[in-house]
Length: 210
Image (cartoon, rainbow, N blue to C red; front, top):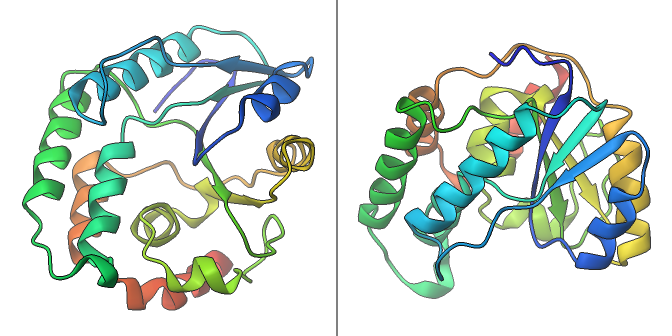
């Protein structure tokens, strides 16, 4: 568990530069972007995100928003396993990315943030609500599925499309984050992803009431 006074939040999803710039102007929020890494979503992106989280841990600010996630490649491969349009796909790529993330985590290159804040591309959703827009309900999503199932209070969602609206919703979400138990080990998170299936997304909604 982290012990510095700041609340570190990873922003997962496609974040427009205009939105990040608007959030970064808030006096209560420090924005951390990853340093340049190699192309693709492999170990270079993982290490860049891990480095961003390490820098975030040393910042004294009410909130530190990190625009990078060391689990991004894990999330992408988990989603790819369940994409019906792509045809049947095994879990080899997911296991490879999971092993890379676990190796980095075990080597203390990063810790999980206090919270994950998910940028939903469509569908109305209010912070703390159990209602999810249809597009998100039906799509396999690592963050809204297995990650949220292990610690519902540590995954928040913002649904907006325009950068200005996204920035306002992100700031509002930061101010209404709920307390809850700390994350389990990353091994347990990965194991939950292995056991999770997209049909359980609706079931995981009931966990939000815990």
